[in-house]
Length: 480
Ligand SMILES: [Cu+2]
Image (cartoon, rainbow, N blue to C red; front, side, top):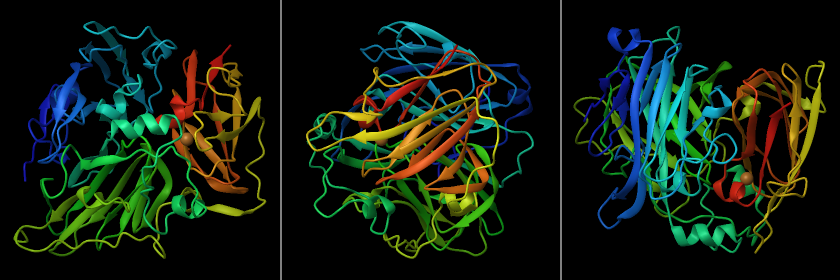
């Protein structure tokens, strides 16, 4: 394999065809500097993950995904952003608590960066964990402007291998246009047995589904994804990001149990062992496994899409180069997969989250999305008419969603880490710290709590499904 983790002042990046990116420990020199300085240039790229496809996309520093960025908790990050996309652009630092002016939302937290111009992003990345960055100017993220950033926690349990895996896909632009108008006929691509498919009535069509022409991990499609070589006895840490703009991914490593330790970069109350990792749009998970015997296994992003087999990479021990890798069935019936209820120890239906003083409470009904509709709504309104949440500093805030659509919605709050305290009428004994969480369909509910202790400003709260966001499912938390 191409084991390409090169340190450049705290940045690990891989040139050429992107491989699975191994994070070696930051050198003393890289970890010792106060400020990590780098330049990100966004520009058009012909992206060709395999023969027969050449996609006109956008890339940071010439690669899709963009370079893997690494900083140590406490270091400052200074990114000179050069926009050569041909349009206005910004960078959003997803999952970070940072000054509002650095949050990268065009026309809300900053003037968009004109083509040919630069902008300086500077902040101390926090909290520690697996986070990511992407353009917040539609449709640049789905065109390729995204990458992972790891904020290293020096107190983290060390891994023998630390691997960054970005799951991403090439969207068909015509289907994106149709999906925005609610008239897409692209197939549903969730695996059989998934809650996404179970939520759909037969013949049910939302018209919002995007079609994808390639499914990649770190810029390549199977069988061109460079295999990952591991040794018996090693403990491997996988950092997984679902950068697909509309679809949940089910990640499975054949024949292995995954021990999930972090969700959206934040430590879980306790590790959870699963066979399959469910990763909603924009979510990240850290999952570990131990190599107990020689073998060759496929790590796969499961879906029923005809090209789903492309989203895979071989994990194998030395000497297994000639072996056929073990795969996984693409069905999820009777499979233990990661759920928030499992990780948060959900109690019985009717249980209530811990009683505490709540200063601001806001309920949202998620709606819209009928066939041929270009409206995805919060309390019946589309952005910017949606009801905003006004908070004072230090307020304890509760947000409750009721999802009346038959789609899951990956709801994301900028600039804060919230706690999921309730799901479908069941209180979580151990609330989950997250920045993005899937709200279940058909009357599903979810309650978040957070303290308004972030820097003041205007913080977006929106569905991270790009189609839903652009069709209005967006609001904001405003500090008074
Ligand atoms: Cu949505």
